Image 1 (cartoon, rainbow, N blue to C red):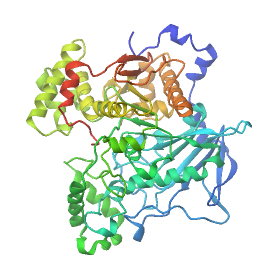
Image 2 (cartoon, one colour; image 1 turned 180 degrees about the horizontal axis):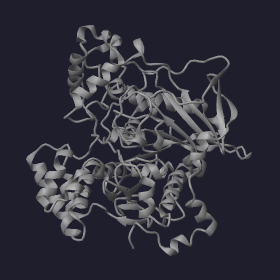
Image 3 (cartoon, one colour; image 1 turned 135 degrees about the vertical axis):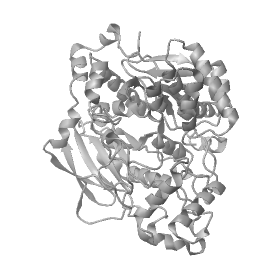
Image 4 (cartoon, rainbow, N blue to C red; image 1 turned 60 degrees about the vertical axis):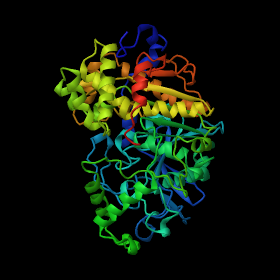
Length: 554
């Protein structure tokens, strides 16, 4: 049966009432204009005023660190200072300064500032039992360059209330402000490396200190993130200062196994200083550069090049080991994980392939290769063999979709597989591998593209223009006339939040999800017909991908 449909047998597993609730309009939208009741919570630093809306207590723009402007620029975050009285937490804080060209669902409505160390708390109202809820802390995507914890796609209402978990979304420093490596230029910055990652560690410290007062369990924290956010989760797993601050982790379409070298990062920093007009011997002049200039220089240095130039770095004072090394994995060996990708991630990056409808394998390879961050003639030959292999084994599938699959495996999929197998070989806590197959209407077709699963996970299927075109809800309703996509929403929410509860993902409309082992190579394919398969990278495909330097964030 097609993954676009849910079988009658599975629908009958839901009662009629449950199914009606599942496909009804999302109540999260109503919260935006719903009258709110004031809620006061005491933190270690002072009291916060939030709002009770529906079944949640919501606190927006909670400061976990002081402003990073001026002399604090390119320095470690300082924890928020104590205050007197009650501080409002009723509106979102600034994103890190940026001019974000992304689609509507992924864009904050402000350019932001350097006063961006804020988080948001979505806490289910207590049931009187006194039990503490699992805490899920979300790191936003955007390739270390764009985004915040407050964009429309990440509205936390449905995930928190339906999953009965306490959700925290975090905003922090990105692009040059978070990942310019100055330690190779001046010893004055040797302890101030990977600031964007250390901001997240500071946020986790805030959670440890304060989350119990919001109803959360400080001993049951799951970090999760998608795309660049998955890369951040990967980096935090290898950060010694983060050890013990969380108990579980989920990496969605952002597995990172290798970091920039200090030498490479220093060369990029020197290029940036040159454009900023700052001399290495007068490095503190960087404190006086207008914040807008950092964004402009980042764009100047990455346009036409790898947009992930400024990213986490191997550094003795923050992330001392490459993330695939036994030393790095040992830091989080006790942490159960979910790791995976979507079936056609690359559709978002190379959408024109579908429009061009390549007629032969050569045309498909020519269309996707420039986007794969590969540079050697042997790489192109390997990609040609990969596309040929997929076409041979799926002759009924059009070449556009074959190209998307090959591009996806090179950009994201095989790095997730490498991350999983590296942890399994080191005998870590269980790792659960997935592929999200639920298709979305996008770019004139239907694909499980990059970030598609977030609209399901956060229950933000109501957000329009998520892929740059209006009418998404209507197109989705046409694709799933029975409302089956709402059941997939419920499935991923249930799987992710059950993992937050007990370390094993499960859902009513999903068979038992086995952890990945060297023997079973188990992967859960999540869709309207979720099922588990063995070894998604069998035989020749695995051999070919093993020869390539895969990954978009590596």
